[in-house]
Image (cartoon, rainbow, N blue to C red; front, side, top):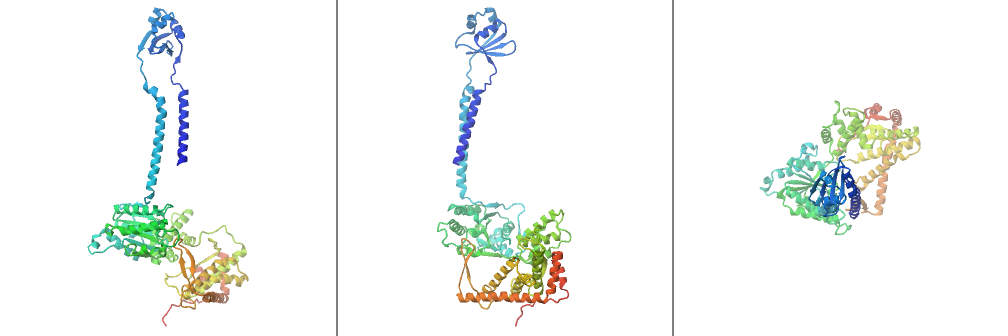
Length: 611
């Protein structure tokens, strides 16, 4: 600010000096000034038509339509002056002499002096306004940066625009009814929850659902992120919280939506930052405000987070965020409904069926599905198509999962052969294992960081996973590494990611799912609440037990290796056939891959049954 002021003053003084020089240099009066003797000569020669006298200044008009100026002494008469220069009375009488009273031109006199003062005053006024603006910004520093959507906004979102999450919408329907008809609840002495906490993994539609609640109830919607409360100055966040609730109460009934509330609502008392930490001050103010307003006024706070485990207990107690709604990943029917909503403004081809797309996208969130169709539209536009076909959608699934094709990444013949056998090993073991997911596609085209890939997709949505399924997954993961060892008598770095996933899965089976030899779980994770990431694991077992855990993890991996080795040995011919087809075609789809095993009876999956 100080540097800007000095810079402006410098330029102002420079411009003022230039203007003063210009005004003093230029003379805007074009009349020529002559002395008395020259005027007398022109009068005697008959070149002067008239003379106008005004004080000390005389203006003579000549026969050639030009004017000249002459200055005389103050109080001296023109006729006496001319007689002194021997001008005859006849020559004086022939002149048209006009005498006018002297007028003081105050504007002309004062303008040169006033102009710099006026410019200086304008400069001070500009600086004053600028400083006042800075003061206003400083005073408004504690105001909340909330974004308000009025209740009569166009294109508002309702529950019809939110597919799936049926239970969550039913839970929030009570909030809508209270905002629309609060007397119905007040008459029975019921109090609607002040706060609703939406919990779920990223992309499940928490923000969209909060907007839909406001749209259904036709009330204003205030949207702010938890990180927008936090500044480097302590107390600003608390001030913004107060300002937010003040604005909300004026617009009641309304919805106040705080996205990513874990940014300010993390558990207190971690020892980091002290008692004057900005986040703690902001959280304290949120707690006070939620206690202070009357639930009957119709201000309902909706918050969203994907880390409910790090929130402060005071934030979750009754009277604050006591209504918690969990948003899960959509199942196959919900994925199809979500795809239909996002496909409304996209021209799809006649033969496009979104059901197969929903089948190929298990684990996709609503945001992933929206991104999938957007990528398909971009791909169709790049191919100069007017409609999106099934081919673009299926290719976009692989792009979202694995990344774009790396066409410039060309493998040499030996690397291509290793990749083909590696992926053939994965696909063969997955096809022959009854509890493994079916193979949908095998390819040796590089995508993302992978030189090739084997796409396995479940036939149905599952919420419980058995030990048999995990063992099948382990066998499939180690099959690529084992195939390289069997065929080429060597291993490459291409299997490092598979082995990492296999080790992690075996560790989870033993320590978290109790699928090893012990009927207990091992290790309790502890989070640093302000950092929000797993820092360490509290070891609640002895070194002797740790050895048993290591042995059990090793045992699971050895069993998976033996299972995969047995399948690869028994069906070595099929392994060569799949690899040769991959080398020839680079990609095998599900039907084409399954046709290679027509002469083999594949074991069927056995379900868990009662003893």
